[in-house]
Length: 178
Image (cartoon, rainbow, N blue to C red; front, side):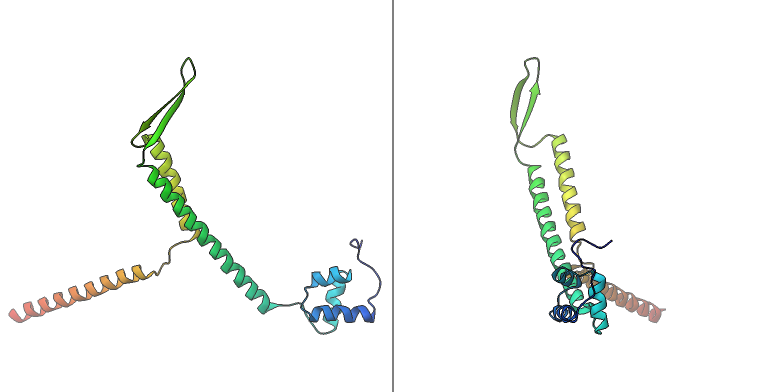
């Protein structure tokens, strides 16, 4: 069964030249199929018979790299907004709040201003902030070899070298005195 709109007649020389011209313009196989109303097999065979291919390795790699960079940018942006939201929620934990309730036999609404939210509300706020912090770290994890981390390693290395030198000097002084 042939796809709708695709012809089952031999490819003419004129069509062959048209397919090859479209290929030379950089059109994809599917675009050529739509343009010429020929099946993907017919277009692929016509191009292959002429010694060409639809392989677009470098172009595909460049496009993939660009998409990855775009996605990384979007993840970074989303992580940024997660952190901002978490910070806003965290601030609410120590801000004045209004507590309220409905109910009673008359089903009334009561509210009261308090200096800080009740413990149960703080727990819910802390949970929401924690979830947002975690989400931001998953979206945009910190660099394993960040400059602060490297500076810390360098400091520890130099301290250890200094302590080793002091220990060696003390050992030599002890050995000379014995």
